[in-house]
Length: 254
Image (cartoon, rainbow, N blue to C red; front, side):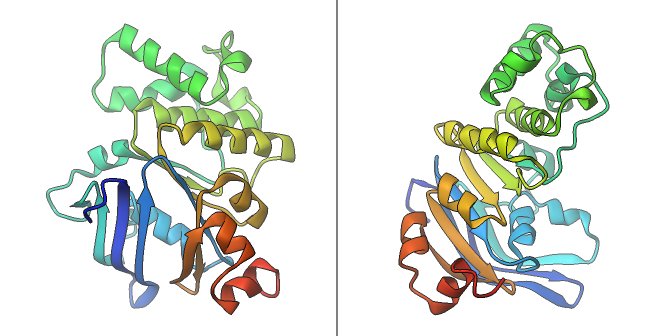
């Protein structure tokens, strides 16, 4: 992996739940400061693949991985990797907003404290910056000591993004981050993704083809655990190489 613009990649990745093979020989590269969308019908393996990228699937006892996932050229499944430090570098935002039952401030500060940061002024600075980055500051700056559970769904999801950004990750994984939100909140998340790619490598699973077309630079199409086609988003949506991709994009199946 000599290309310096490649932030992360999988090489011949197979993934198993017990005897069931959920991913088949997936090789895919993610470039720095680009948004890559993973699309495909429900159950095609795109979320499973995303969770391999920061070892979230380690939490499933019967799962196993074969092949490599490289971050800056280092295999994250190597036994020398500390999973906590990996998840600091590769942050994750889930489908449903999952704020902790704490104040807005403490939600964002949580990861900093877990990572051993004790300096109050440093925590305050990072919390403020992260909430600003998540385009939420103007809405919550006077409410930082109130419960995060009082925020709207869209605000909660941006808070979860702020929480992921606070520990200064290099890669941000998003698993259908807007699927539980209304159209206005969805638009805010999409605008935010455009802003964030100036600094981060972003990989987003989305069930919405329109969303993939709006937010991503590259799109990868998965079907039954296999990577079928990957390319620049504009090209993939207008001139896909494979009929299977075209059939999915035009709504003939899925």
